Amino acid sequence: MRHFANWGILGLTLIFLIGPFVIIILAGASAGPNLAFPPEGLSLKWYAKVFTIESFRASFVLSMALAVFGTITALVLGIPAAYALNRYDLPGAETIRTIVAAPIIVPGIIVGLALLRYVVVPMNVTVTVALFMAHTALVLPYAVRVVSSSMHNLRADMEEAAVLLGCSRMQAFTKVVLPNIRGGVLAAFILGFVTSFNQVPVSLFLSGPGVRTLPIDMLAYMEITFDPSIAALSALLAFMSLAIVFVAERLLGFSRYV
Amino acid sequence: MFRNRREGLALALPAAIFSTLLFLVPVAILLSEAFRSDTGFSLQGYVDFFASPLNRSVFLRTLKLGVLVAGSAAIIGYAAAFCIVNLPGKARGTVFGMVVLPLMISPVARTYAWIVILGRTGIVNDAIVGLGLSASPIRLLFTETAVFLGLLQLFLPLMIISLVSAMENIPRDVIPAARVLGASWLNVFFKVILPLTKEGLVIGGTLVFTGALTAYITPAILGGSKVLMLETLLYQKVNVSNDFVSASVIAMILIAMSFAANLVLKRIATARS
Picture (cartoon, chains in turn yellow, brown):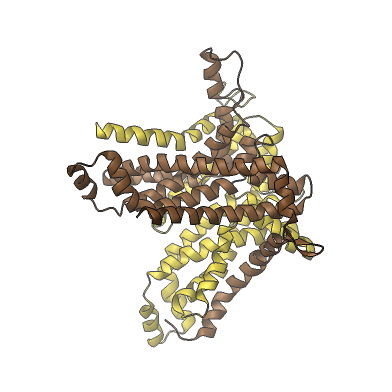
């Protein structure tokens, strides 16, 4: 009886959390012209149509580029910071930690608006560069936190031993530290990539004419068109995220780091 | 530990400077805007903002939806987390994974599903018309209910994750012991489970409440201009009416509400023990 009640509660919760994806996958596979569930016959034409829409192709490329390069930049800034916060007795370490973590606490829409008004407009930064800066700032806290937690488990004396045995400090870092935190760095990259790719509020004000990230392009498209293509695209994006998470979990036990 | 502080600072400062210049300084200027006037310090922006009945109702609706979503997430979250913790090892990992997965998927995709469910030709309306409960489809989209459901679906996983990790720390035999000694399930919950998981509740509650306050996509898609929340109102103030003072006021309110939620939840948690 207890088991039955347990599974009942879990079943309902999972239906509420996962059910909408099943519906959206099927709604995108409709043969009819309108968004409906159950779909009016099955076909893959809307899944195919998504790839022919020019603006989606452009915004997908932009979102990919922002997610990849923004996250790499955040890691380039974040790994040394995480290293320093773990290995040195820094004056003001708490302050640095707070400053770097701050972009998580403030709502994205405010970050985007503030960047637009006081950095982008006064300094005449182009839309693409503005988006790149915003996405990097957004991912930086995750990069520092995840890398920090994997660095935390690595004993400092391994590095000291490497230096005693003749490595330079840089060699000790690349030969001893980096291989040991590789999993954490990859996990930070994946978390950063997914966060950046899916993110809307920060880029809302920063997107300009013709330069939009994919989620914002989707929001604009669904305001004027009511066909199943957004459902198909949403399903494709869901599959992409699932594939990334699945591969990451298989390769390195992603969930240990998050 | 390495001693050379200058070296350490040289490694940590680029990230800190990047964050300060591109985040801290612009946001600080934006927030200060609502306190400034031609004559110096002023609260006129706040007075004007709350003088408008529309702004007041949006503020109250945001607060209400935030509390409702966080409260419902806590109730469902406790039930689900309790069941997950009691599962055998392997099933537990799978179910937990299924709870976490939606977090990795684009919120636009997650929210759009509700259009398919609640729209004029959606499942719910098909059922209503099919069962003869109403002659024509009723409006379910662009209602507070739609926004509520969307937000709950979006943020429930955060509550479940927080509560599961809190419950894992409850010693195994505490609950059976309380039962053996004659406590009812209600008593077990309020006197054993709740006090032992309050930190998880504070974390989960803050995440869900703050998430609901600052979500943009869900109220934009499911609420539209009929059911404005503070985030969508902020967007309108900037893009439609160019009213940057109001935008700054809303920004300050959102940040203040997030901090207040955390403080209130912490206070409740310490008062209980």
